[in-house]
Image 1: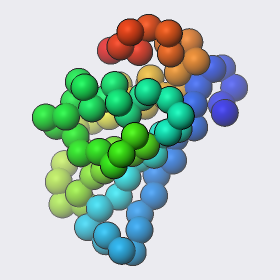
Image 2: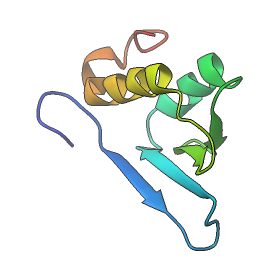
Image 3: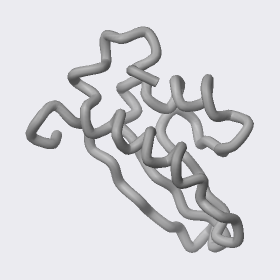
Length: 85
């Protein structure tokens, strides 16, 4: 956990899927579920734990910044219906 009420964020790449990398969130939260509700037309997801990116596609920076912001303040927004989106 991060000081200040945030939740851990982790990036990873796996040799089994060399054309992809992912941003992982705490799977015990509803962050990815909420991101999927709002951004499923733009982002790809892995279960309830990750946003998956293709190495050949541009990253939707504005949306990604919003997701990171929510993770960094998660414990302050976790009781809001849409986590502040």
